[in-house]
Length: 260
Image (cartoon, rainbow, N blue to C red; front, side):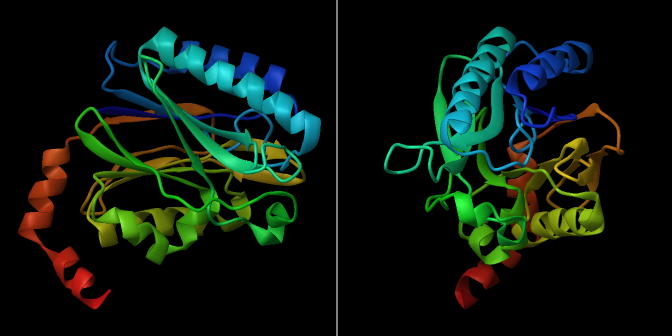
């Protein structure tokens, strides 16, 4: 599978401008193979920034964002992931989910609601937490998806890690804790013995700055591709056989399962 992480700036609380910027960016920077074996991941809240919108604005941002993802997936014949505000269990946007949408080239659609809300950023005051993990096959790889703050909770991740070949994290991770971002992603790869990818935004919004640092890591914890603090894409070709072989060579997950 070819994985591409689109590390972009986001126009704060302006979905239309964010979409226009993303389209230009993808046309310039994102070259994917013309097959369903490609996965493109966008940052968390890719069309508003981490502003935790609610109400009618969240509804509008969600509707336009979903259409954007569908268009990218079908036009580029690839899988595309990005997070948006999402209706709560009651069907409204008064306390929405931070909802990751995954669209496939044939119209496939799956969703993951962020399970760990960032209380220090007041996300939990206006958003509802999800309850389910998302793992599904893409081009022969078992891929699990997470959103930003989920990265800090290894026990939750380990519940699906052993049954995954790739863990993908979509984030708006601020510059102040950039070193944590990199260290935690590498740790998740080492402890789950699988590929890990983290896509972050750049630029500024809501009084915070973002330094990117998107990264793709192999099952041994080695860096396959890593971005700086500029708008760019990074890519790597991933092979599930490498995950299987390394887990067989160094079967640490068997011991973890016994203890858990």
